[in-house]
Image (cartoon, rainbow, N blue to C red; front, side):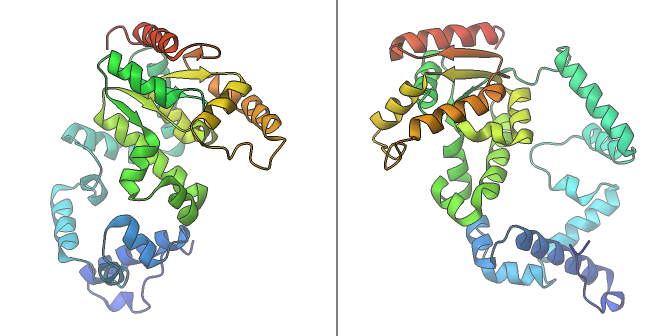
Length: 299
């Protein structure tokens, strides 16, 4: 419970100063939990180190206080004003009602919403399609071609992550580790959902390793598992000019088979699958297009 450490003289501060001090403590705490220096946060957020220092020391911009006053006057929580996307009055009222529920009631609400989705009462997927599977299955190549054939936008989630962070995926892993990458992956996945009622999305093979993110994908997209034999996976990766899977590792094929076996139960949760082994690109694109039409007849 050491998240926030208000100044010792907080009781002597005026309410505005105390609020800014609390905001600064939360920003500093969040940065510390992520293992980020102030310089790293400045690079990732596009906010100057000088302003971050002021914010963490309780000297945030006065506009924060003005927004707080508006929130109080409208009886709306300040975080509701700061949420992404559009939020109408009815949604704000619903959020307030949910906050007043007990943990048991919230759990039951979640179950009811899940039941509604399962029964088709809420269409979360619309015309969105996600291609999942290991590297080398053809997600990028087939995804781009089938999207063009169906006149749909094509997005690679890793490219969205790089655009959002301003860093290459390798740099993200180097600076923030896998945990930092997974946070960005989930944030960008939500952004794709919010902006695209119809899209073909290619995701990294390891997305299934993060349960919460994978659940968002399965709820929001018609997931298609692109499959291939281990040998074809390996050959396609090498054909792309990447020889790392085999370099100095004679057991690479055994490791690949082990990964496929470990992830199969996750990939099999997809609505449909397409085996691309031994097929030409044109054949696979045609079969994938037909499959997408079956899954999204009204899209």
